Amino acid sequence: EVVSIETDYQRIDIYDVIDPRDGDINSYLKSLNDDESYESQNADLFRPNRKVFLDGVLQSTSFGDEAYHEALVHPAMFAHANPKRVAIIGGGEGATLREVLRHKSLEHVKMIEIDDVMVAVSDQNLPQWNDCSDIIGSTRSCFEDLRADVRLEDALEFFLDNFYNEGDEEDSEDEDEIDPFDVIIMDALDPQDNIPFADALYNNIKFLTSLYNGLEQDGILVLQLGDSPYYDDASDEDTNHKNRALITQAIDKVGFNSIHLYEESHCGFGDPWSYLVACKDSSCRRRWYASNAEIELAIHEKMLRTYSGSPPLKYFDGATMQSYQVPHSAFEAVHCKKRDPSPECSYLRGYTPSVPNVPSSSFSIGASKTSPRGFGVFANERVLKGSMIMQEKSTHPIHFSPSSRSLLDAFYKHDPIAAKNAEPVLTYMTEHGFENTLYGGHGYDVDSSIATFISHGCDGSFNINADPSVKITENTADPDNPPVFQYAKGQSKTCFNPVIDRHLPHLVGGLDVALRDIEAGEEILDNYLTLVSSKADWKDLVRRLKEECKSM
Image: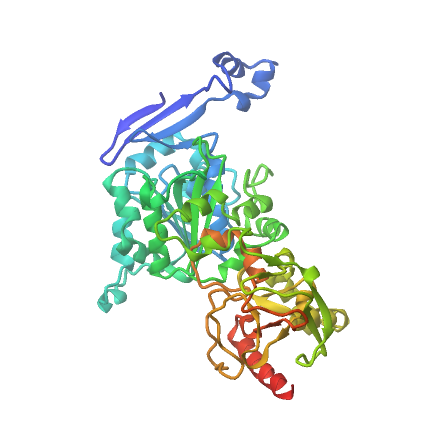
């Protein structure tokens, strides 16, 4: 036992533990000797695992410290373009603060911890958690870094007092007004903890609204959600994970535009640990879905160096971030066991054997009187209503990510030589592809099969589409007000849905189905109005389709 103390808020117990499955006391004792033994030369391999318990619940371990806190902090920090102001709710050990202080862009971090004894005990007994001495420009204790403001008060009251506005504008002129934050990190109790304060944190719409208000317009909230579900678990709302179900629903309601679930399995808790990132602005998706190389470059550019020359991060890198981008299948399974599951649970979880798919080999290219190109795609055989169209190909489009599109645009505008080479690619992308905003920004996807040559069905003559309920045509469309299609290619208006997050390539591909029986020899026609997502492109598309359809 390292320390055991009862505070005004909780009981703190810290132990050094040697698990006989991983080591033994004799090897540890040898590691303490100043000799030439392997153990003494590699003492870190034989050290005990320091464990922190609050009210008997394991909160942190020295073996899992970096994995847990890097997973909590850095996905959200890198999803933000330039995080300068950060708030931490809880985090008394100081490790969350340590990871935030690694970022060059940081100007101010406010750590709000209600238990002053927890901070003092951690400072004395958990040096690994709050040691910032290797971060260039920081201090021995992370709590003493000049960028850090450690406030020993109730975080719930802090946010409610400063950011929950019920219409009283007088408070907005308070000279002590707190500026909003770029990132808020909630490192408090587990939502599974069966105590009133856990309910106050996770089942409190006023508190969550104050967190939303406490963020800048491009702000990001991140919180840990406890142990991850297993595939065979019941719905969160029917288990001790009800607070996790409540907060994910509430986050959707208060106005966040993009929500992401992920898990880390090296935290030392026995089970993988789950986290949630919520963005006020969906532009964060562009950085959330950054490539391995883009994340590695961001780490190199945005992290403070260390005095020792060792890498600042042990677990988080580009490959790790890519593993966080897609929720585990268990999140999807549990989500679809809700009493009122999302409609995507019935059709977007992979191929359904009961729904026929007409493969690309059942179609061919032929002369078309309806296409300005003079050719189109025709059915070689009868296609029944409701059949999927070339689904074996549609989930493998040629993908131009938002960053790739931006790079092509930059070449085209600023480099005459590169523009000559880029122009055919841009033409191919825009003429044959469809716009996609699911990954943030504006990307494009081009069908990798003959489906790319499917023409637009003028005046409602289209016979395939992703959403049978769409009736809009180029003649009825309002060029100034693009509608929001639930099932349009490359779009989704659903904020929180792990089914969609796990099957984005499928959604991007289109999910096109036959809207009626299509006879052999009949041309396949889609509704191009469901292929754009930006207001500017919508207006241009409506105009172009009207002109083309009039000339047919």
